Amino acid sequence: MLCNSCIRSVIVQAGIFRKTRLQLDNIGRSLNASRSINYKWNRQVFLRSSITMMVDSDSTDTRGPTVDLLKEKEDDGGFVSGWWKSEDGELSCGYSSFRGKRVTMEDFYDAKSTTIDGQRVCMFGIFDGQSYQQTDVDFLDSEKDTYRDDGSTASTAVLVGDHLYVANVGDSRTVISKGGKAIPLSEDHKPNRSDERKRIESAGGVVMWAGTWRVGGVLAMSRAFGNRMLKQFVVAEPDIQEQKIDQEFELLVLASDGLWDVVPNEDAVSIARTEEEPETAARKLTEAALTRGSADNITCIVVRFHHDKIDPSNSQQD
Image (cartoon, helix red, strand yellow):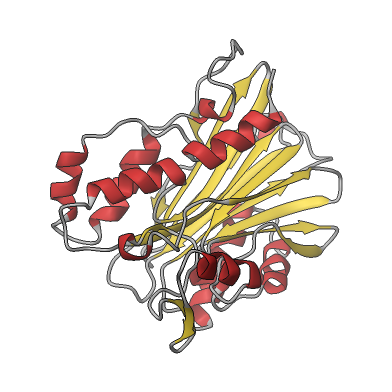
């Protein structure tokens, strides 16, 4: 039987996916080549992962295969996008990703689905870098012999039956549309948040203004993966929120800060609701962020709930 407390515990301790042991010595050498290698590393990490760690590892649950949901396609404009619809027609998702004005692409997205005891379990994630605490350890270990001090953020949503679990570290964000209202299910980890400032100062750190509020006058994020020099203050423990899915749930939007820097929560939901197909909605959101002057990589996933639209005949992808 699925255990909610086990799900929450695994998200905190090991990330949304089970991170298999990698040959970190080889990865470490690759990391010296270019910062863009981080993206390739992320893909290797998550595609070799398993969603089954979202349940008690000692469980004897009957589990189906883990399926990658999103199939990539790239158009002439440099946008990468894709979509998926469940066989029962109750759930669909789409994504769009664009390098934007950055020299390299460091965002990463993923979506997987499996069944456990006949119950569907889906994971949707936006990673401006990696997963959670165990990944933070491995990330730091892989860079211990370099002069780099990289960092990353993530926001992930795990759908288990009619329960949604959202975890975030940093400023990647998840917002839901419920009854037409935009409701954030994560709060950006900024140093000037009263609770974050208190935590940092209690650990002996300082939050100061340097163009924006920064930890030690350096990092504009109070939680992240990596950032070795500030690790005492910049933790990788995620905040986790739980919501029960009901008939008012319309969609959720997960995106990196390249979107949220220029598109408020309400605008994101408003834009996404104008499109029935989630892939089109995700593409429209990335284009809106680019038009509004985003200077970062832009990646988002839109998940739509079809409570009254069950049509197995429309479940096949192109």
